Length: 142
Image 1 (cartoon, helix red, strand yellow):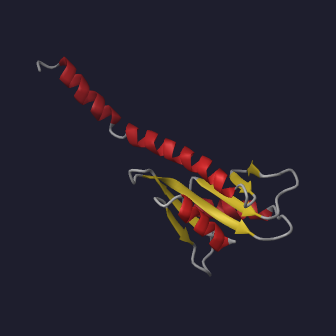
Image 2 (tube, helix red, strand yellow; image 1 turned 120 degrees about the vertical axis):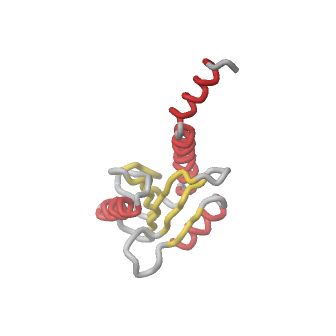
Image 3 (cartoon, helix red, strand yellow; image 1 turned 30 degrees about the vertical axis):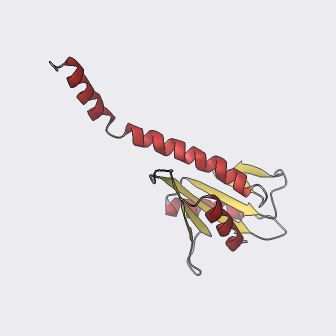
């Protein structure tokens, strides 16, 4: 499931870096470093995939821990088995839980949110300096 998910994400988001976590290293399955169309880094999504018939609540905390270590903005758990009160996807304790059919749609939505926030942060860089330059120009003799 991990390899299928990686291929799906690579095909859908060619401008992003999608890296598998090496075998034997603790952590999520995949790390998606989201970039805008212009190549600006916008954030990170960590992915965990489970191909199993029964759900375990402990997966959520493990993925949250991995997210914290990797300093990722978002975490998504893709599983064949979902919690009882989840049909397609759900946000639980800061982690998105989804089935494999909805994973790509959820990725598009969350990725666009990361890009929007990233572009807002980028626009705010040097805001005070830009305002000062504009003020000097408008109040100057030119």
